[in-house]
Image 1 (cartoon, rainbow, N blue to C red):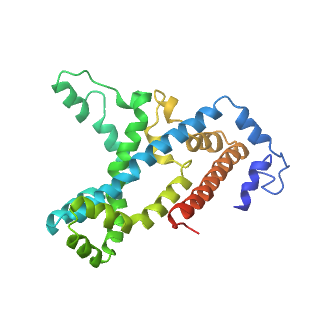
Image 2: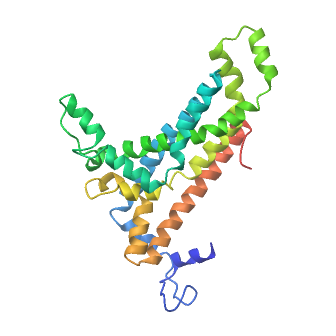
Image 3: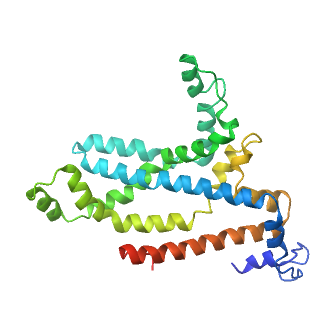
Length: 269
């Protein structure tokens, strides 16, 4: 954390962090004066918000659906199938996506061809990148994320279900008035943490899916920091951009935590 001071110095490898001369806010100004800065921030925000809107409710819906399944074996089978992709490494997952979406030999394009639809270069279309990233992430993480909500549902007082049944509540009413309030504390905490990481989208997956044809939408702050800091050895500039990113996340985390505390009485602190 202390070494983040590199962002305010003209870092020299020979002189070291503390021996390098101070540069003030030079590198922050360089970033904001760069024509690509606003594009990077916009790409990061759009991708993060898209992922939040899609990936936050789906695990909740999956957990509520699994909680209603009475057949134990079927329930365990669905759980295993849905959370198994979480344990696949990012590199392997990206390889699977590339094989599925390959322009000519990919399964998806073969299916489209069987219906007389022309082959599509999915990863070469900048407009498709965000959807590919987000929905593949849902496939990989939804089942594992649902475990948290299933654990919360397991802690709901059975007396509440009995009271709902006595009052004549149907299945949907039971979900709305018993299940959802039961998982609300966990959902609020996860939402706060998700918003607090809204500027920190997955670097590895984006970088591996990125190519010259889709950089218009796939170039985000994390990939830019990597290219500027490690590939171009501009450590001070990359640290400044990364520090700006972290500060925005911190501000969002504090704001959302305060709003959640006021609205639902659930918060991180």
